[in-house]
Image 1 (cartoon, rainbow, N blue to C red):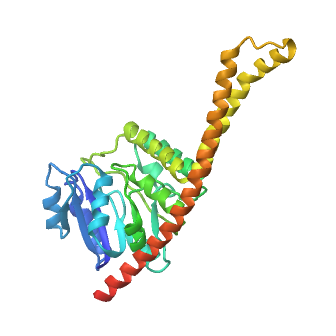
Image 2 (cartoon, rainbow, N blue to C red):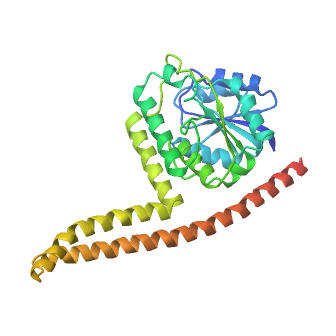
Image 3 (tube, one colour):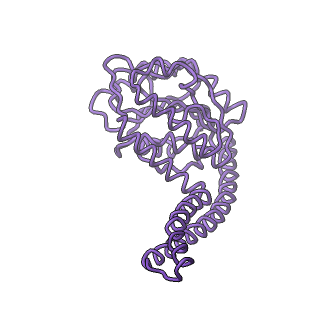
Length: 314
């Protein structure tokens, strides 16, 4: 088991990967630096190996797929995840690692948004998107994570070995943040100085399509992790619409004793039944979620036991 594993997922990062590997080897002398190449068509893998990294490959495209393989294959007491585009400073790495090793943090977030991100990043829609995602998640899930979509994070062994990687692409950062909040894991923020990509290095993130995926991920995870609130809100909305259409029918009946709009009455009745079913679904799913939370605590205990056994074996 490694003491510290630096994880660098890469796709066509030959302009920067050698510098990134060298920087993190210098910042964390005892760490093992892993570069996972995700079907690069340039010299990313060769340059990473020359710089001293352990190079492996993931042939399913997408950052989520790369992280899934990384988390499966690598055992370490502390993991540091960083992009290979040289936008994150290596001098922040020791502080992030210490938060895991000494403070017992499960996830440490490299917070760009409280630093230089808005002045360094030249893509205004990215700035807006990051702020929107941060606001949405902090409001919906009642947390205080300062940078939801940062690719610079440190993790404990327990987090990595109990986190189910479900996303395939860049929405993985959002998923990790919500998972940590929902599972009541200890999350800390470390402010970092973000710098934009060097000239010649091209971002793989599409502002609009990947932004839409992130928003869909937030909605999906809110449904999964807050089912009572999600289904109750839908039930309340459907019930209000049904009542709004029912009131004129009721008023007509009270005035004349007749129901001239019988189809409307039937649709309103069906709407109220559907609202009741949605509410009951929320109650049932919230009960299942409570059981899932208890099961997860046992998984954490299992992971802790694996870590102790692996440590004693070494």
